Length: 455
Image 1: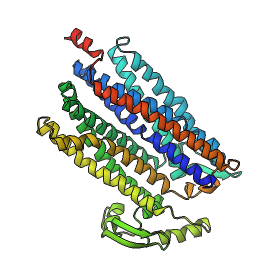
Image 2 (image 1 turned 90 degrees about the vertical axis):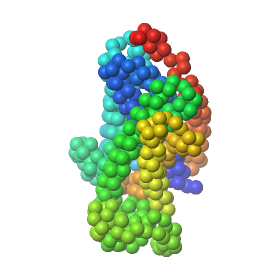
Image 3 (image 1 turned 60 degrees about the vertical axis):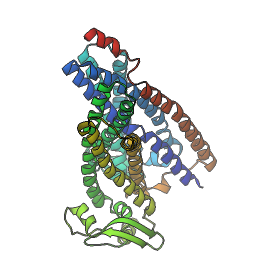
Image 4 (image 1 turned 180 degrees about the horizontal axis):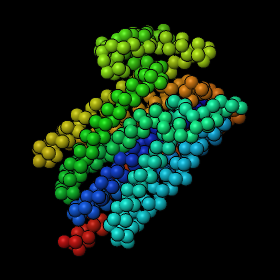
């Protein structure tokens, strides 16, 4: 494997691993803030118990998310220095704002929240968790500002062999960003909901603190329905935007070789990428046109025609991303997202209709569904990044031009193996702590003293 392939593998491993923890930080932080808001409003210590229990799991996730995120930026200097040179004038600004404003903001207020119980007023303590939520979402926002420039570059001009910023406000108002950020936000809500549902079901099965985990289960179901439904709605809008701004990405996602009007949506396709043709396909007539235009007609360009257009615009070269990876990652994301709605309806039946009676099969489905958002989130990011290939910055800068010139394959092998081993090692304390706190339930929490005093 050459330096480019190794650098891409390393970035994929590090990024996907880090991304496992980001949505839960965004969603679970918001869930805890809502729980604590209810505690402050009502004075019901049940909600304080919930805040403390879910807060411990949140802190484990937050810590591992920070630890895995620290490695991210090193890669831009080590493996992608040519990319950093080309786009640093633009890419550096949102990342600097993220670190200096958002990350320090959430870290500072997280400290107040952790150590401020019984040391600051209820309202100040509540404000601190809301500031953590705002800070973590600002952090995600500014990182997505940088990524959205890669997907849909705006506010720049090419000068002196580099992309130089000419309009900073164009970056945070990028149309791609305002489809991508809501998608990520509601991904976080859905991920946290399934996390809450699975652990609540586990605790109810163990007959631990029934009142706390019954309420948590109801909260998780409502939270999950909001998150999953909005993920679908925003995803529909995002797909329409991709068809307009990155038509090759959507064509690859559908393995659409020829231009069609109306265009069919693939349910299952086995294709030959070299010959650019289907070997076997099951399709829904006109459904892709409906996805794109909200009506059962409208032209969707195929891979072959887009390739010809790109050759005229950008010069000779292969502009087709890995079709199989794009196709299946898109289907894993969309398929799991659809299945999650069914799981939520099952959880709603348990919480609101079956008086928390949990049949064995239902228990297994709900408990193991905790992994579904993680698979969907990872598949979604793989599709987002792989579908943009061969571009690092779409239409402006290619991936082969982005890799560090002086880096050797041996050096990338060394760092990739090192990062992978470190990340693998971090799995064990993370899972151990999650399991330990989840098994303990509300046992040992200081809240028991608070319940006595407040009663």
